[in-house]
Every structure is written in C-alpha cells, then in structure tokens.
Length: 378
Image 1: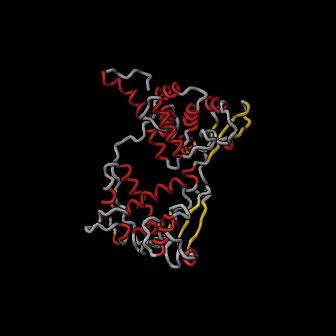
Image 2 (image 1 turned 45 degrees about the vertical axis):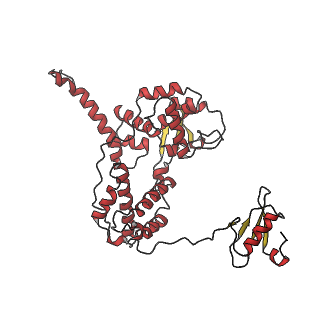
Image 3 (image 1 turned 90 degrees about the horizontal axis):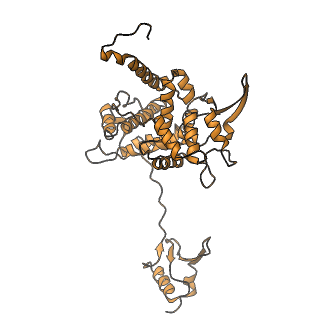
C-alpha cells in the first residue's frame, strides 16, 4: 500500500508513555483523536491511517469526549443533599462524611415514591411529608439499624436545611425509629478473649492489637492511629505514671471543646507496648511499615478472629466487653463517659442498667426456691 501524502501526515501525532511505549494518533481539527494500534511504518499502520482520514476507522480507538457533569436542578432532593454534603459536613470526621454521603446518595436513587419510577433525587423535596419518609425508612425494614440510620441522616439533613432557610420544615421530625431487638455487636466474654490470646501469643501483632483494644476501650478509628505521640508521664505519690491522651476522631470535630480520653496505661498494656520492635510513631503498623487504615485494621482483626475460631467476634465487641466489665465491677455512668469518650449519658447508662439488673437478679434469684432473705443480707 502506498504511503500517505505529506499533507495527511501533519495530523499524525506521536506519544510515548512513561514506560517507553510508543503510541500514534490521528487527529484532524475539530475531530476526535483516533488511536492507531498497528506498528508504525507497517502496511497495516497505513491502512488504519487511511481509514482514520475518512472517519471509517474500526481498528483504532477513539478517545471518548469529556462530558460535563450534570448538575441536579435547584429544589430537587439531590440538590438539597448536595448542598448539605458540601456545606454542612466539613467539620465531621472523614469516615462519618463517607457514611452520610453513601446513605443520602442511596436515598436519591429510591423510586418507591413515584408511580412512574422517577428517582427521588430528581423530585422536589418540598412535597415530602411524614408518610413519605416512613416509606423511605421501611425500604430498609429488614435491617432496623440501617433503616434508623437512613432516618437519622434524612432528619439531620432537613434540620440543617430548616436552619439555613432552604426548607420550611423537617418531614422526618415525627417519624419513629424501627424497634431493634438485636443486641448489636457481640460483647466478647473473658473466655473468648483468652482463646484469642492463646492463638495469638505475646509478641504477635494480633496480641498487641487485642491488648490495645482491651485496655484502652478505644474505637477502631482511634486504635488505628494510637501511638507514641499520645503517651506522657506524670509524677504521683506512688512514682511516675504512664498515661495516654487522645481526642476521639468520631466526636472531636463535633464540639467546640472536644472530649479527650485521658487514662493511665494499665500494666498489661504497658507490657505489650514494651514488646514493640519498630520505631514508628503508630503502634499498629502493616507489613509495609505503614499505619493501618480503619478499614484495613478491621479486616485484619476479622482475619485474626477467624484464625482463633471466633468468627462471631469483632473489634467493636472488645470495646463493648470492656464497658460491660467496667459496669459490672461498679463503674458509674460518668466514669464510663470518661473512659470510652461517649458524649451522651444514655450511652453509659445502658451498661450500668444492665449491670444493676444482673446484680439484682443474682440477689433475688434465691426467692424462686422459697428461701427467706437472710438477716443482714442486702
């Protein structure tokens, strides 16, 4: 096949990748760029070039045209969600932002409120009423926690919208949560913790992780970043005391005066920390010598639990076990607030009430056998 005339070669462009690979394109003014796949100078190359000249190429690849992102119309539910996600969530923890964005984007895709199958994101939010929000909630009815999370996210968004003058009312205000009879994450028993430590003995990364979770009570988002920078020493009557202080990631951005967890490093944790054989600031690091992401640490804990024959256990279950143990040993609600970084008293009272019920049950069970209460007993 004869080579093309020089006038056609001026539309030929050469590009070299960072790996040294040569690529050729044909692009005429006002036309899309077409990739020529055959080796340069071969007969097949010139065939592709000829086809490209007449827009008949089926061997080369045309670069897709960039299309502008379609913005939601003002007044639609998607528009309101975007306003909220852009303007109101700057002070929230990154993980919380991701979670809320995922929930609200899923709500935008719902078609349950339209007989024609129209997405809620394309509909006006101003016509939403209590019954509509209940329908949206019930789309997640099989998983009550997810349903209630969706309801909270919608309600929080509308509360903000009312505050800034974008909405006149919150249609989710009087929509009730779905009752959840699940106890949530399983709280590890002392036997399960012992089983984990037997499978992952001292000196292993899994053992260190368990001791940090167990003796700090931190959430996984804070455990993943806990390190030497959070340790300090004070002098007491009994001598130097090693402590750790960390502002919980989940709540620190929500308050003008963030809650800080400031507690002594208990002996079992101090012993585990002494066994760390790396110089990184963060205590828990990956095999690539980098701190774990929250998701990465969660996956690693999942693997370690499975290896120990505890597939029903989770990292959050260690924190929950600590709260249960502390409450049963007499910790007050306010003490639990300080220990676990909670901001609402009812979170702590849940554990103290459970502990009190257990104590009262232990003291009252003898009545089932007809025994009389012994004098002096409480």
